[in-house]
Length: 206
Image (cartoon, rainbow, N blue to C red; front, side, top):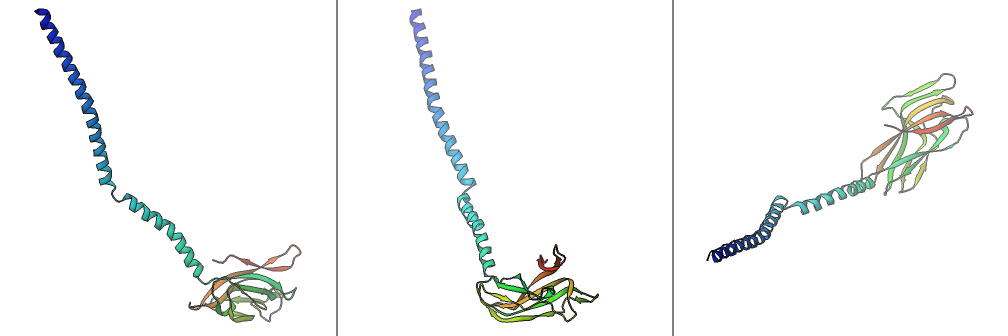
């Protein structure tokens, strides 16, 4: 009888162990599913607009450079380059070539020196004060088309003789198509060549 009682107790203990084991197998997946649902809920509630916000930001960042490039392309642009010298002994007889870098014509083109200093042989000097213009020879053109060039006869010409040095501001004034009258300033200076002669060069202007 004692043996039978002992067997019953053992059976009861085994049954409790199996129930506990089964309960653990059931509880763990349920807990995992619960945690997964909770994590998903928190993710959705914390960043509901992240995808839309990200797309809008990317589109804005990508679009700004393109917009700025378009605006710059539509702005009136003119540039200059140094041409030939008509008189080998006179650096001021150097031709200035104006290029229309816009997509439309430039009208009422004119050139003048609006500042700087010109020194001449014998000690002569001309100081061009800001606001006072010293016009060039052959310095005007009624219009210049897109991609076209206009060449002056000379620039900052005075009757004082041959220059020994100069540092002047050359102003190119023009009226772009559908834009008001505007201008660009360029710095033109004299430089000494290895053989001691005077040459004309362009330098950056603030």
